[in-house]
Structure formats: C-alpha cells, structure tokens
Image (tube, rainbow over all chains, first blue to last red; front, top):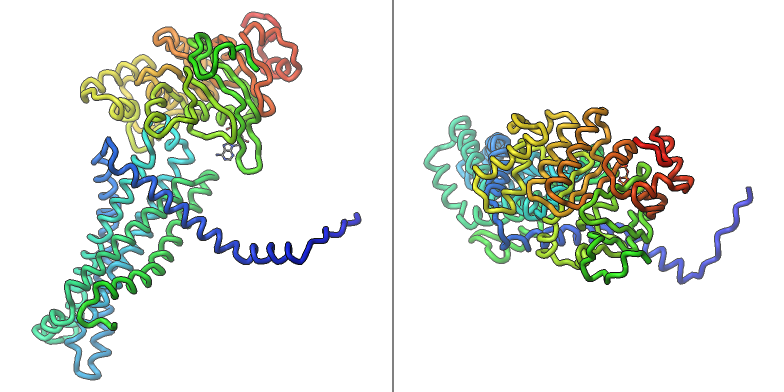
Length: 280
Length: 265
Ligand SMILES: Nc1ncnc2c1ncn2[C@@H]1O[C@H](COP(=O)(O)OP(=O)(O)OP(=O)(O)O)[C@@H](O)[C@H]1O
Ligand SMILES: [Mg+2]
C-alpha cells in the first residue's frame, strides 16, 4: 500500500486546530458544567408546579439522611477523637492542652464536619442515586414515567436535590456534635485535660458563626452530591456496565467537586461572615 | 405524498388517527430513521414489522415525544406533537398507553401500585375506587391475587401483562405494544393476542403493535407496515401484504414459517 501524503494545510489552520486541541479538555469541562446547570434549572422549574408529592421528598430525605446517619456518626466520633488527640499532644508542649477543644471545634465546625460528612453522603447516597436512576434509565422506567405524563425531573430528580440540601447540613451538624463528644472524650477522659478549662476555652474560641458557615457549605455540598448523582443516573447509557461507570463517576466527581468548591466557599464565607478571629 | 394528505395535517382525519411525515432520527453518526412516512388507521390494529434493530422501538417512542426527531413531524388529530409545550404535552401523553418491550415496570412498586400509578397521578379517584379498578384490570388479564408481588419476582409473560394492565387503566385512545409476544411460549402468545383483540373490542382504541411473530401478526392485524432500511418499505391491509411480491417482505414472511400468499393461518 502507498499511503497518500496528508493534505497540505495552511499555517493558520494548523494554529487554529492546535489551539482547539489544547483547549478541548477545558471546553468539555465547561460543557459538562453547563449540562449540570441545565439539569438543575429544569428540575427547579418544576418546584412550584402541582402535584407536589410530599411522599417522594420524605422518601428521598430518608434515603439520604437516615441512610447515611450511622456512617456519619461513626466517622464523626473518630475524627473528633483523633483531632483531639493530635491537638492535645501539640499543645502540651506549651501547657495549653485545654485549648484542644476550641481549636479542634473550630476546624470541625467550619471544615471537617461539612466536608467529611458530604464525602460520606457522596460515597453512600450519591452512589445509590446514580445506580437507582441509572437502572431506571436503562430499563426504560424513566421513559415509562414520561409516557404516563409524569415528569421524571419532578418525580425523581427534584426531590433528591431538595433532600440533599436539607439533609447534608443536618448530617454535618450531627457529625460536628459527635466529633466534639469524641474530642472531649479523648482530651478529658483519656488525656486528663481539666474539664472546666476545656469547656471554657471551647466556648471562647468556637462561635455560632463557625457552625453557621459549616452548615451553609453543607447545603451547597448536599446539592453537589445529589445533582451529580442524578446527572450520572439520568444520563446513563450502555447497560449494566454503563450504570456501574456512572456510579463510579458520581462518587469521584462529587468528591473532587466538594473539595475544590470548599476552597472557594471558604474564601467567600470568610469575607462576608468572618468571625472575630478570622484573618482579614 | 400519501393518500392520507387529502385532509390537511393540521386537521383531524376521519380515517387516519396518527400521521408521521418525513421523520428522520439519528443517534450520533448512526442514521436510524430517514424521511419516514406512516399512517395509522383509527380504531384498527396497525402492526409494524421489521428486522431486529430496524428502529421500530425508536419510531414508536416518537409518537408520544419520548424521543425528538432530527427532522419531520407527527400529527395526531391535527396536533403537531413536537410543537407542544411542557404542559400541553403532558396532557397529550395521556391519550396514549404504551406497553414497553421489556415491560419497564417500576421495581420499587408492587404490581398493584404499578397499575394504580397512572390513576393516582392523573385522577381524583379514592384509594378504594383505584383498588377496585386495578383488581378488575388484573383479573381480566389473569393476574388477580398477584397485587402484592414485586415485578422482580414475576415471569416475563406476567410482567408483560402487568405492563398492559398499567397502560390500560387510563383508557387511552391509542395503545402501543412494543413486541408484546416476543419471548412467550405459544399458548401465552395466543393469550396475549386474544387480550389485544379483547381490548380492541372493549375500548375501541387505535392500536399500534410491533411484532416479529408473523403467525401472531396475521391473527391480530388489520394493517401491516414493514420498516426496512430506515423507511416504511410497504404498508397495507393484511391481504395486500400477504399478496405482496416485494422480495424482502416475501422472504420475511416465508422464513417465519407462516404461509404467505393468501393461505389461511
Ligand atoms: N438511545 C439510543 N442511543 C443510541 N442508539 C440507539 C438508541 N436507541 C436505539 N438506538 C439504535 O437504534 C437502532 C434501532 O433500535 P430499535 O430499538 O428501535 O430497534 P428495534 O427495531 O426495536 O429492534 P428489536 O426488534 O430488536 O427491538 C439500533 O441500532 C440501536 O442501536
Ligand atoms: Mg424494539
């Protein structure tokens, strides 16, 4: 065989293709982002429309909230305990171990509780949502809903998005409370830090603003997890394998998105509602 | 052009309930339907035959706008299906009952809840009324007593019948069956055929049936259309199709083991 030489192309055309190639991943990312925004907007548009189907919302809340509760509590307790342990050891050098509760509490309230509980929800409920909707998509149950004049966005997607935004902050708050219990247990019971000092410094350092910041973040994280889960499920294709891939993607994408958006959310929240001790 | 065009598309035609014009649909680079025209006769059993993968399921999904075409239009009683907005489309879809190829029952709901679903969504009937209607429909299909079972524990034939019961509860004007008999044993196939004829008798609906099974097709069809190479190769009454000498159609019928050319089933 004699392969024909590639057609000659102008320098300009080469540059245009080259630049296009270089930006393709970025374009794809923006494309995907846009798809998620469209799914969100189209679902929210159903919010004020009848019928409201409270049962679907309750079921979604139960699935996301109650379902993720045990693992959130378990991880919460041990996170608080290990943070307390590290803080006590670090502060002991300066005889300041009674500050362990306050510093740990701040970190937990603002960062660790919302982020870690959201990661737990992503692993459990986000994956579950992607699998459930994905299975419904490939077995034509979503088409069946539509054929019966029921909007799958209103029936399936919207309740999950709302439930995510409601449940994530509650889970985060519970995570925080259990983690503080873990921290107290480690510091006061195990490491014999003085109870009165511990409580006093915790009260001094930890503010309601910190807790509020954490919960605000959680609302966004809850939306991210459920939106990505729903997107992957709703757009599933390619049989059981496709559903599996979608589930994996849901967990990976939502985890990464949580961690990245946490940075930007923190930045914004520190500016608009920084507590007394923030760096400005 | 079709003989059904004596009445403008934007007007209900007395004979043709649903008219498809120039329907073109591709998935990515794969062209599945190409400028397809089809007329569906009112109050009759319209069967669509064609090879596996020909695009029959894709075609019927356009009827109620579950898929949107690249080009072309579908007219139901003067309504341009693809021009409908969200709310009107939702109303429009209630005219249809669709029995899916793989049933598409809701896994998380029992048989009874599956059948009650359209009633609960679209009527103001009480729980007791709904229960009665559902029991009625299930009994008519030989499924009474299975109300509390989940679709996962039903056989394929039972699932099909539950799917039919679900499609029937709202008394649709147009009933669409996607391969109702594929994968059923001969007796169950006969059963489903009788069921379809029974439904036709009782509810005076227009039905569209997709089928591969020529014996069953000749039993139930009033009209037959063949989908081949992205278009309707031929459409006509049962006798016209039997007498047809179009090679592909002839071959399709002959190899199915059912005598073509005028022989009785
Ligand atoms: N959602 C989709 N995405 C991509 N391709 C699709 C999709 N749906 C259908 N197709 C393709 O369209 C073609 C027609 O599919 P369709 O399901 O309509 O066939 P069919 O005539 O119903 O066959 P069968 O008798 O086996 O059910 C197939 O080649 C299929 O791969
Ligand atoms: Mg099919």
